[in-house]
Length: 241
Image (tube, rainbow, N blue to C red; front, side, top):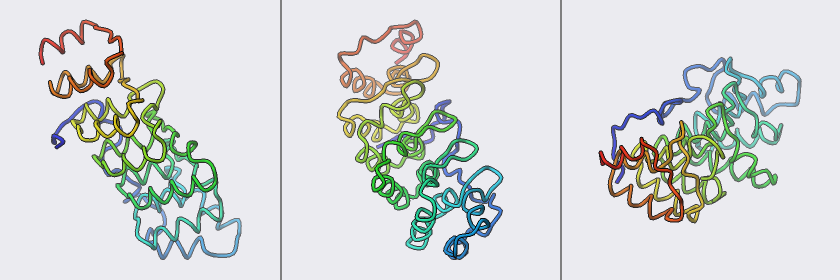
């Protein structure tokens, strides 16, 4: 089971559950949004769809952040049919609606958005989009501890655990936050083809040695062919563990 109560620099950025709630400029109930978007096309309706908050969230960002009931899913498909590009639109933090759904723990909405992207042959484009923190929606799922969402995302794209190419990897984040079940899922669902990178020249082995001897052994076994760079900081980690 995952350990709790951890605080780490890897966990900074977006707090768990940080959604667009509480900062909307329009009523956010699914019925209200549906009434706005499900009307004859007009410049006013298009404007509402593309930018409804000061933070650059579109209507789809708002829907993705606030619910995943049938009503919210219905709103999402209406918005998507009006403008498919809104599925890939980013707000001021370069978050897509998929980032928002993952961060808010809206698993049904996230699954629905993934299906929409797959249906228009743009699945990898959506899943691999990075925000200003150089994080994909997979990072958000890791941060809030949703192993089911991690499984869903990697089921759609097993290579997703390799992104970003440079920066903090989902595996490093999981180990830093002591999400050990998720770390195992990242390894298994990616068939072992995943990034070990961390910030400031660190890697997943640095994170593991600070936290758990058992996890350290797993990381070494997972990537036994890796020629780990034994920097002074990593040597210190081994001595302290």
